[in-house]
Length: 254
Image 1 (cartoon, rainbow, N blue to C red):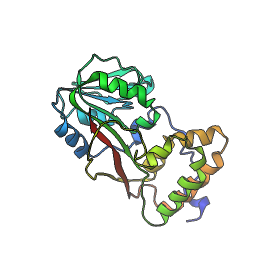
Image 2 (cartoon, one colour):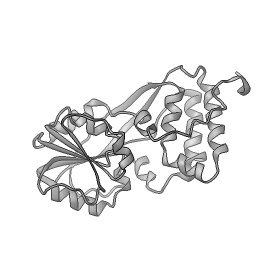
Image 3 (cartoon, rainbow, N blue to C red):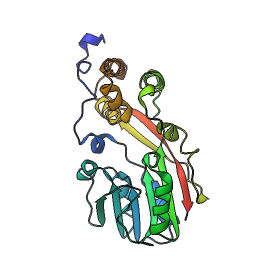
Image 4 (tube, helix red, strand yellow):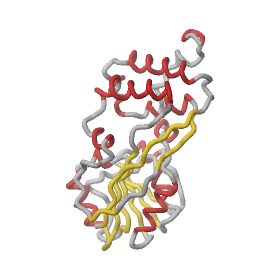
C-alpha cells in the first residue's frame, strides 16, 4: 500500500501519556516469579526494586505472603498494579525504607543498570535474611521475523542507537559484564512471547529512553520515518505478529 494511503502513517506514535509504560511494557513469563520463589529460603517477603508500574512485583505477589515494590518515580507508582498483599514505596534503590534482615528475595527487573550498584548491594546485604536470593533480571532486544525484523534491527542499531545511554550496553549483554558479588544460581532459559498489533508495538517503543532522547534532540523525522516504514510492512494495523524477548539476568544467594 502506498504511504499516502495507509491510515496509520501520519499518526505520531511516539507521543504517549504517563500511562504508556503500564500499557505497553511486556509482562514477564509467570515461570520467572515461580522459579524465584522456589529458590528463596522462605516466601514471607519479596522486595522488587525499581519496580516501575509493578509488572514483576504483581507476579511475585502470587507466591509471597507480602511483596514491596520500590521505585524513585512517583508517576510510575501512581500507575502500579494494586493487590491486597502488595505495598509500594517511593524511594531510591540505594536507600530503601526497610528494616534490617527482612527480605527473602530482592529483585530488580529491567532496572539494575540504572543503580549505583555498590550502594544498592550494601542495601541488599542489610535487608536480606540469611541465604536470601537476589535477582537482577532484564529482557534483551526484541526479535521479529522477516522484513519487519530487518527494519527494526536497522532502527535499533543505527538510527536510535546513538540515543541510548551508556547503561544500555549492560542490557544488550544480558548483564553478563555487570559486577555481581553473590554466589551464582543458574537462571533457566525463559522468553517473553507476545502477539502484538501495530499500536502495541510502537507504543512499547515510545517508552524507550532512547526515543525520548531522540525527540528532545529534534530527531522526530527519524522516528516518524521508522514508524512509516513499519506501518507499511505491518499490513493492517490490527494484524498481530509474534514478538520475542530473551530473559537474561544474574541470580545469586546473599
